[in-house]
Length: 640
Ligand SMILES: [Zn+2]
Image (spheres, rainbow, N blue to C red):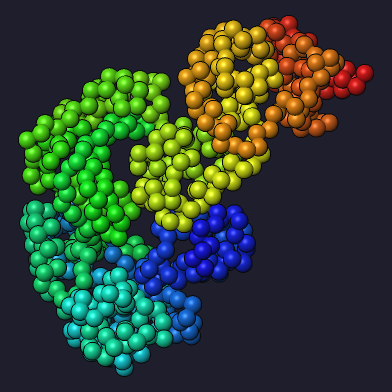
């Protein structure tokens, strides 16, 4: 099944796609996701939705967290919760926690409670599977999607240990003791949560998990009976990371942060709940893995808006299952103020699929940090961007309007013009942020390099296959020219140019403004700017011609009759045509030698009018001296 991930999704058959989506979903639920959430949603599920909108995966609600739903669980074991089990809102930064506190204080005022009197109850956020214990401790159900969970009461008979008072109805977390995992299972599973998720997902418990249960290492920790600490707002905000560390230290189970709950009942009532989560509770999750590295170099790159961003390079380290040798240094001010230079020791962090970043400076070196003076892309002088707050500016940017740093737009436009799929904004942004800023770079990417930009293996393989696909497909020469993204040189203008010059000729000799002006539709100023831009991009044009094996000469595929009845005439079509679509009629007119214009100007010979022509268009034609003829008259003219 995994091998399907290497195929572009459009080449996967309907049956394969259905099986693949179910498989990916199951692996995700077991805690071993093979692709990122975005990749699953945007590529595979989106394609499934397009082809099979009534697929059960799309029509049946899926649980939010992995761990419970598997094709192996008997559906008769699904149990509807009497009261929905809500999930907890998540936060990653102290700012988000401050916002939560602000919401609590606003609610307190509404409830008539003095905001400064509010306190917050902290507990460890256990990293396992949520469950509910019912019927005097005899029925255990997973949270599932919050509405329906799976009956996993068999765990109670197989050695699951209840931590707390299980005689009352209780909610808690099913977890594995960290020390037991480290000693017995660390070589077989990536994380204790994966073992627990596997247990909760299947009746066929594997031998290792069964032994762990029998050994008493799998526990249901009842939330109500967990150790807590109650603090005021200042203590919470100031020491949140310290509390997180302390709870981790004193908890024998894996944790991934803190749960913060407002204690005041009246404030809780005002905050209320949505259908998914309680607004009075927040989970502050930990950062990803960190490492301390020595800076080898600080490089600057320029983003699509012209913003200059520092990239800090260091010897390769292994972080969250990936080898990392560079991290973002955030902004120029950060580099200068914190003296991040060669030899400095910094702590880097990688959370989820986010690009690794510098967390803090551990020790500075004797070297001076590099202050970027010119754009790494075009060499133009870079300037500080004034901040609105009146504080010291953080960013520098290249303000050269012709800087090719608008890389994301350029690359997206290029592939869109060549009718390649998959090069959406999010994807291209990641590639550009990973240092692949030129169109040529994208053609040279390897799977490994794409993954280092934070994209999944399947997505990487899909991107490469898509490039291979367009490279071996027939591609019109005007599209290649238009894909350069030159101002005012779209597909239409490009094909006009190619009626007079071959693409090979342009690529080897360039083109002058004089040559362009001779072509109908190219004004003087436009000709100068287009010829300048083409001549600047000759290397790229040659590179592209070398990439594509089947370039179609649009001029020869649509032969133009230079002695045709419309030869030398400028025509404009307007209104709804009856004998064919507007595009078909334009194409036919071109074949007959006409120069088809998009709007009436002083050179227009004929305005060919279909039905419902606006009064403005008619006035315009009269003013410019163009002759108006009906579609019928036009057909007589060309069929003479
Ligand atoms: Zn620049």
